[in-house]
Image (tube, rainbow, N blue to C red):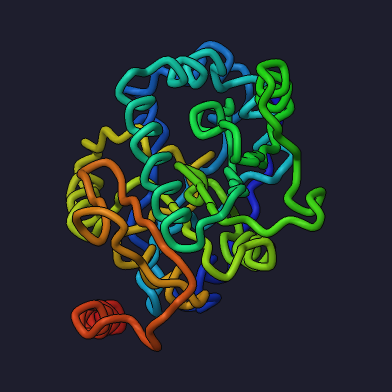
Length: 309
């Protein structure tokens, strides 16, 4: 049976704090029982189930929930190529609700950018472009759209459909992006901070950005902790072989704030929080600090995390 490598994470992936609280051990059945994107037969012969279970940790500084260990890059790729069912992922391209959301988001992006600077041409980057579905919607005359994607099959599919996708942002030169888009990507990144550091030099001063991640607010985490006691968790997004970070609205705001960004209202409401996802538009910071209500929340959260248990 093949051995999969697990690599320990010694510090929080967004604030680098080294002290955390162990929450609970994630059993594979928690995320496999209702997950249609995994080939169970191939999973059973892959060796992945022979691994030690992965624990969730919560940072005692910023409150981010993250995996104690991650698969090595080599084995993450093996998981995606052999165990994951790509056709199930590709089906989302044809989801009418998702495409309508992409059209709405594209309008909001372009309306905001054109009204601010009146760009004749807009440069758009989709970070983690997947099958190119968002790029296919926003691409038009006057919009230079490019995607970043590491999966070779998805790159080939996008290029076959006339969508410009490359493996790394470092392959792009002499371009500043007016629009940054990243949908359901940052939960997969072993080091989100390193990616933000890489992205920032490519952003125009007046850019507008969008990030969406699964919503693991504190209520959801607390409910999972309770259910872990009697092993009754059913949560497909808890797939710890692939999802490495579990953001709440507050930790996503914190992450953006510490990197010099602020959430911006370009529609009715500051941010979008649903039971499934947290989504925010953001830009370079105009104000010096996060707002008082968020600051009070972080103070309470940090006091809770640091209190002796």
